[in-house]
Image: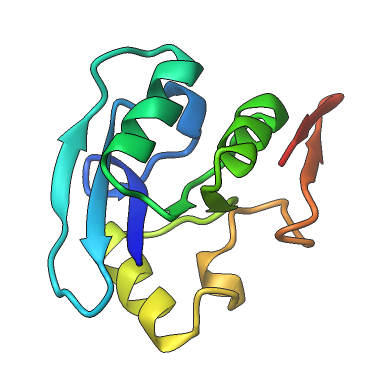
Length: 122
């Protein structure tokens, strides 16, 4: 399984839609490879993740349309995650990612979406 974690200055990017790079990990590996998106367009990000063989995206907030594009292309998403990328990767491998310390503030029901200011984030 290949896992991409959206990254900004060593931490999970707060909003995937605006992120410019991801760190890609292969299951069982210790360190990931940083990849930069060639375009800010959501559809381009989906195609690049597919081209890189990504099965799962771990990210901060993500818009519903982009999350649905990823899911329909076969890329699972785990959203509303915060923390340092290496710690998030380690927590994922150990099954600890669902703990409150990795959940973005204000998001109590991870995986079910988070409502803020009239926008529904997935």
